[in-house]
Length: 293
Image 1: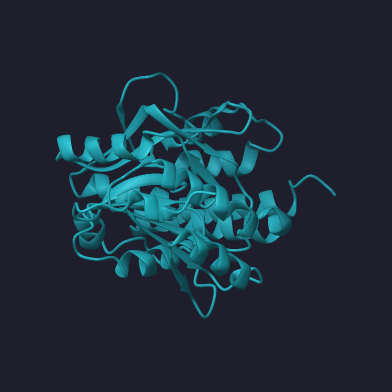
Image 2: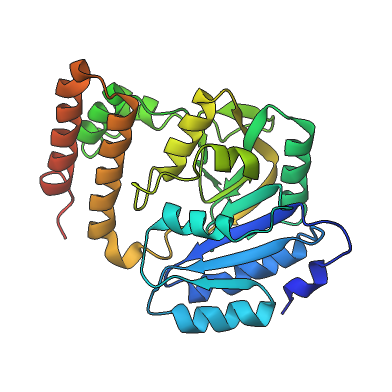
């Protein structure tokens, strides 16, 4: 088992890694192993625990690796916990990898992401190609969803999966092998400029879970920065490890976050009927269109 001490050097801490755990004891060891193998000089690794039942054993694993462990007294949500972790970093950390603990970085991925930000000052966030465990591409670089597409997707996706609204809503740029801009990058694994992250106030903590990455990508674009998808490097995303046992609750949270994001993006009074239509569509999708169990 590797330890994070193998990454230390005399160089300044230019890169840091922050992950948030919740019942993630089975995943965090592999995640830390992959970070250790990335060989970033003096990378600081911080694990933020959202007070799950597995907090104590997770802390022991993190301690054995020599990483920092921040055990929050309550579950504050994914984005808020990420913000807490970033707040603890030394000022010398210029770039921060924000990652789920169910991600495993491939060797060379983190150095390549750091190099991209160093060489492209207009870019505020860069993400690798994410792969599922079976080798297929996980959708991680998409356009910012619109209110109209959100309504159509909510109403028709269950029984008409290939409807035009869902196709646009799910429009994915995670294929091909050339770097390209994206509306937003999956928060499962992305490297951000710390100064930009601070200027934007970090993740919006009003999103308990889901859509905090969509919102961040949207705000990055509005501020004049770019989000870049870098498919030449990759990581494996095993996916959903913390939420599978609470799928109904998480689906409800996802819908709440989707509604909140659309309200932020389309706040004007004349969008009120469309915002209501989205809420009705999400309600119908949850209560009427779910597959029976």
